[in-house]
Image (tube, rainbow, N blue to C red):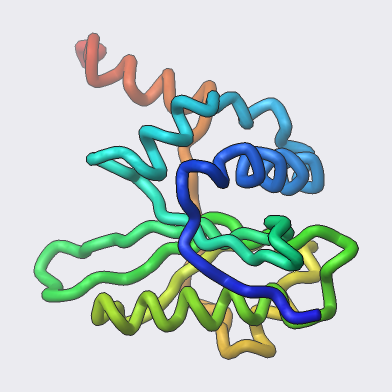
Length: 165
C-alpha cells in the first residue's frame, strides 16, 4: 500500500516525536532529543516556526516524516531547503514512502522557488544510496564543520572575556 504524504499538523507532534526518537536511537544520539511537546509546537507550528514537517501515512497512521527548513544566503535572491530529517518506520521501508516524502519536499521547494535541497548524512549511512537514486549528488569540494560542546563554550567564552595578548 502506498503512503499518502501531507503537511504535518500539531496533532502529529506525538508521531513526529516518536519517529525522531527512533532516528536519534539509530544515530546513537538519544541524549540530544530533549525537546518537549511544547517545544515542537512552538518550533514547528508557532508564529516563528523554525522548521516544517511532512508526514507519510498508511491507513491513517503516521509512518514517516521529512523535516526541513528554508535557508537564505546573503547577496542571493532566493532560498534553499535544508532537510534535517528523513525517517520511515522499518516495516514500511522499500515501499516508496521515502521517495514519496522526497517528491513532496521537492514540490514544496519548487513552489518556494528554491534552487536546491541540501542535506547532510553520515558517511556510513546506507541512505546515501537512496539519496543518490533520487537525484542528490555529493558536493565533493564541500565539507561540513560544526562547533559543538565543549568547543562551543570555549569559543563563546573568548567573545565574553577576550584574552589580552
